[in-house]
Length: 500
Image (cartoon, rainbow, N blue to C red; front, side, top):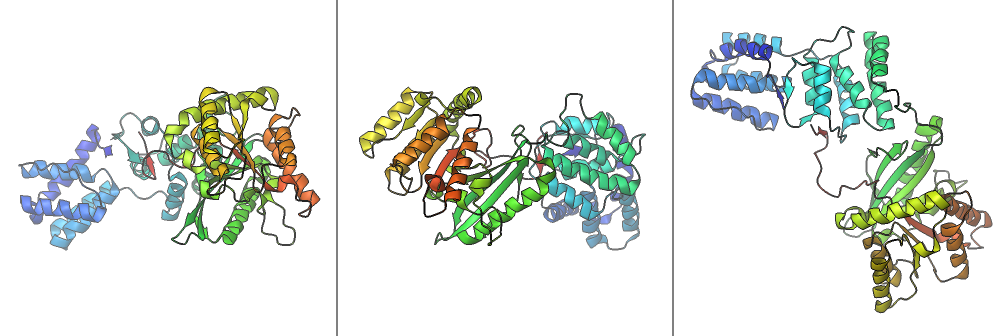
């Protein structure tokens, strides 16, 4: 909430309080409380107006609350005018409030575009940013606030000596603290405003002053990782519709704050088309940065055996190439992502796996567990081994994770034990060819990353064609990074709210 806690702000309240004291409706307690209730209903918020026994004190509190935002001042005029209509006092009230309400510096459409970009973005040090941008004598911030609220307060303040409006300086500070792709969009928004005001040189100077010597360039280095994360869930009572949610991030995984897109709902065939459209979009948007694009499907147990890596990467029926041949494509566990009780072991085993892959390219044979029995006793032995051997980081299933199968029980055991890497064949996990491919993928010592070996295996399968039924065309790998979550595991701040 924004408070006018400086002396100048307090002095500005007196003319407003004086005119409110002359409004007949506000001369008695019942009328004042009625106006406060009507404003709260219209604004859909509870106005914390102190009910002072003295009329002037009560109206001072009302004026203080209303001055915190132009929306409240406008609502005050609208509500009071319904009782007083066009009286002489109302004319005076409108004049005083007009002097207190700043003119909009930015078109409504541009303001909406900015707040859409910032929706869901959390910047922990927003109070410090506000104080730097606004100056020590500006109205203070208490508790949490919305970006729109901070933006509005900054609009009421004069620009600095460089002439750049303080809201634009605020946007530059936010851009310096968020992921690369969002920073690019925020800079573009600011540049559009600066060009219309002939302030590009001044804006550039501010941007340069906010870039520390050790900061990476705005554009990520060529070949940096980029992520398209797709969450797929069944929708509706019949279960034949799906909801597709997606997130994307250009640049490395740190800091992890992917951009959440619009959901799509449809049949599985329609969802495949939506996925291809999303891939085409990131290819178009990210082409100039030439990133290493990685595609991840977050799936529940029911859908883990979908052949998502064989879905086409583009909407071209004449030349359909599986996305798993073009990109590293993995699946991730939805159940584990939302259950924090499994995250400690998950992080421990992930760190162990990342260390092995960083040192040796492949995993140690002693860190891989192969499920061998489909009995209850076999499942007990598997769980016991995970409890005994904390260095186990990968699991090879004995069967596909279909409902009511040993594979389903095995993958549940691995997920709950924090195993970050699980491999299976979607039709048959018992063939010698599958065993050979797993050996090559998990334990190979060439220069390729493990996920790149998976991609090459799928490419070989595509080259040999469907009649050969190479094991690579039905090879699924669960590769689950606990540091890159897309589903909240606990309640967070409401969308559009920044934590001060």
